[in-house]
Length: 248
Image (cartoon, rainbow, N blue to C red; front, side, top):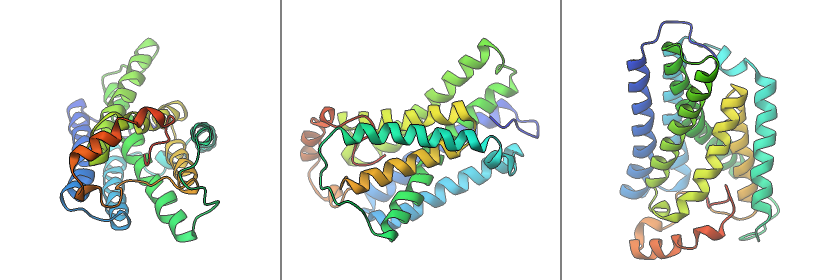
């Protein structure tokens, strides 16, 4: 990780982590389950939330441009490896609707922008903030670093879970696929220490899902159907491949 350029108290890091967790849940729950916002404007709102929280973290930690460019070759490699791995897992299952390609607008909006926003919110921010908290305490060297890394991934898992619970369609076993898939990208960021790993990997995954006709959340009309029908559908989640849910 890029170490902070200013002194950061662990309590401040804990508060920021709480803000990431709360923001990750509210943006999905309030906009999709309560207000039934369509996917296109939802992606815009999610991007604003993820971008705002990331900008706040970069300023708060004093990381500056180093946050983005330090170790960027490793981040690029991590993105390719993680994204390819998850894409291969998807390819082992029959396509929902093999379309062979998507429009440029859809690829940019739902693939690149949506993927980047989720990569930042679900994988980069919780890992970075938790690592900095342990760094402040002096617990990132030797075996303490293993504990810090494990705690950082665990924090990311919490954010991934609460974010997807905001979608009605993931309140069941269907949540397992995005949980595992996004966790792979969080580990990629932890190992490379560059956000390109999580953001790029998420973009690759989204583009692969779009190509195979897999609908990204929020699913059309899901907030308007009985919850019982969603629960019944979620019982078939184990048939989906790792990272190959309708959206991550």
